[in-house]
Length: 154
Image 1: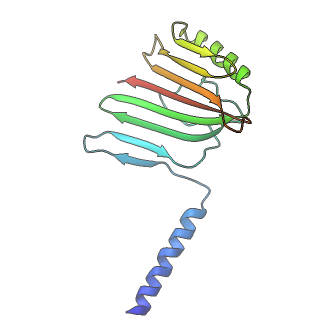
Image 2: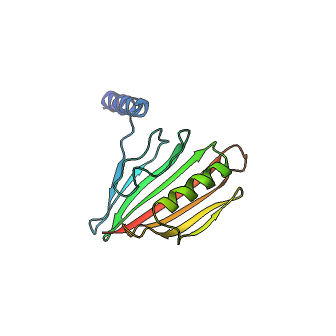
Image 3: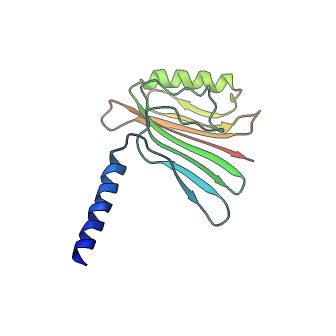
């Protein structure tokens, strides 16, 4: 009995070691009772998240390290939450996002874009996507953390 228990524990340990050493991280799907789902990618990403809701032309700096990429679909509302860090300056980010939101006709969005903070909230007129973008220097001042949330009712 003790021998089979030991063999079983070694098997579980082996699966754990192999599973955690993989460089590929599959997203986790969390389904709810009402048919909604959430896609969560828990580890740091090195590439742009693929999603229907975040436009392909949305500017993410080349050096960005994506800490959180979470997609949710709940009762007809599709959303993405994206959090990344970059070494780009606040000035560069402010200019980039000011230009981007002008190009997508979100001039009416409430914007605060300066060297202390980034904040954009508004609705994109063509797709009716609701946007919230915030950014600020981290405590160490060597990176900027940017949080993007986009929601769309289906």
